[in-house]
Length: 404
Image 1 (tube, rainbow, N blue to C red):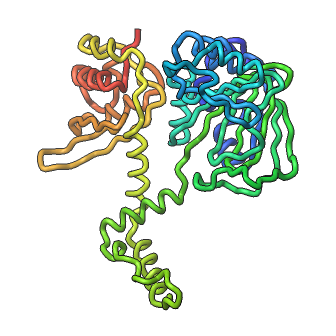
Image 2: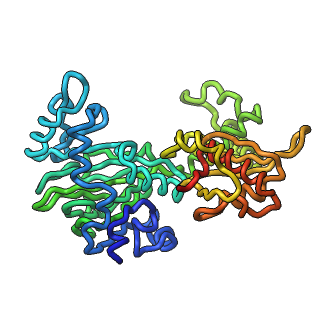
Image 3: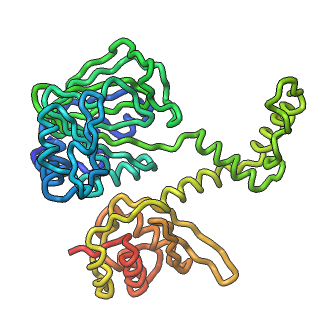
């Protein structure tokens, strides 16, 4: 790795897991087994998050107490121990708790730090799912949570210090969220792997894999990103609900008395099997999958640095102006016909942006461009002035931005 790579912020999934490629990750590791990457490059993730970032957030930003948790060896530290009556974190008392073994957990810090936000946005485009981000800041030789498993996959980036991790035999394979870890009566299996994550290293742990981690003789800082992926069962349930909106038979009541002793199950079971077959035959898988995608796009909040100035300056965009697409967009382009004429719709940020149908080739070209391009260079036969009109609209919608 070159020094320039080491100094740049790791804001995309491919670089975060290098030298493993995304293709190799999905074919060999995703939902299958844990992955550990050791680099020997302590500053690899440094621009993403540093101890100085944590200190600044805790000591200068008046952090609401609900944006932070603390635990010590699996025991939650009550918020009153590190907060002010005003509802903000008390950095002095938090530091005191930290010095006695308390781990600081900062959920949602990607909403405050731009590089971390960019990294999470890229993961959203790769996995098509919501994320749950936790920052763990642990003093030396301390442990936050005891041995457990998660009901979501996690990607761990070690940014400072080190932790010793253990992976155990895991009885639960790909648990649902309703099968979340319950410490009552839990006994860990045999240790199957032990490794130290040093600064610049990463690991991936599928949901259900039992693990724990403890800081070494130096304080530790790492980013844990939980992947809240939709499961096939989620789509199946939604598909049946959609079908029930169309088919009254699926909305009928279960036979009265079915819970009573002596109830004759034969007729009810036959009806149940008939309804299952009926629902399966009527389900439209493409509609359900598209609805899931549309809902994900709908709730995705725009992260568009400089948008106010871009909007104000959009009138100055003319043929020859250099523009670029914003990073980590999740969008869909669709063609619609109506009595008033054809139109093409860009679905992005939960908004449907409509254009005349004849701009579709130029629109698709603009959205597919990997880097900056000049107004007038788009394919599709749209003249320079028409391209300028299209680009100005896309800038005002937060999709493109003018360079320079």
